[in-house]
Length: 225
Length: 225
Image (cartoon, rainbow over all chains, first blue to last red; front, side, top):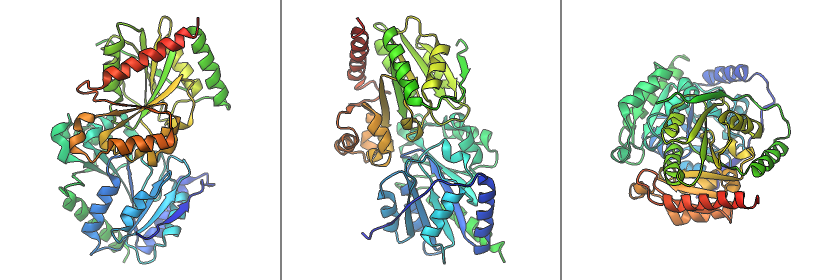
């Protein structure tokens, strides 16, 4: 497997992250690039979900992926093997990405020709929720083994996410996970949140998710004309 | 169920957390109180593991539990139902606890007569690893569905933990989890780490864990004499 580009991300010097995020979003709009900020706990299946999404979308969209990780480049290597343009962002122990760090990542990735860029944020339900990265939409993955009560315990994360992917539904029979209750708790935090139950392992539900994402990207580019 | 005391934790004003942590540890030593800092991802089963541990130890030890949570008091209520002294610490969105915050929690809990206090830290594999809470030992729970590669991705967490509890081993058949590889990765980060595979749901392996903790507490108090 080819070596993956690794970028050491530096902490932002900008005080006003919200302004930086808005500026980045406007720039992405001009360029017709849709940036999705994907967040989750460690081990929820972000990389496997991404691999499935890329497989499903790569004939229709030019896709890039930025893998934020404290250390290691295993995830970026997995993604690069799908044929998508991939870069590993090393955060040097930092617990989140802000807009300026995301911009560094996009420059390192080289977005020329890309239509969809997915930022795989640091595995953490707390800190990443506090920083606008400049993404068009925030999405998060909650996996069945984590339990249906997570929206009660990590309110901000569920509040800032427009889309919640419920992963690992193939193991639902082995866990006390109440999908109906979970959806109710998610909508307490964000009444407009879209919920996609999937199994990244078996592929179940991935089609609906990728159809939604494709629509999102096309709408974002279409508004451009 | 009785109402559980909820404490709003304030951010520390002390610059030197390490000195504060050492001072707290010395004070706990004088009082013969063993403080265990328990960390993990969201949904790894901290509260269920604690419930099992308390059931197993409550005839031998006076136990207190501090539940750090961004919001909600569901965990502290569950713990209080076991008969252990419990307090809920609200961190107001903060992603970790430091020594001064832990001290506030201990004062709120009222440690008079307690021999073992367990701090259930914020569900997060990144930030809590960076702050010494003043605990005698750090322990963490990694659950099977999270994957055996987590020590590669969250190096500092596994480096600072003396004990790693591998939870949810009852669902091992449904996940690609390699216990041998996981142990190897854990020992790459901390060669002295003790590993306890358990299922908090079925109770498997909990006895060995509670025997170890009882020994720890008695050694800490015994050195006192």
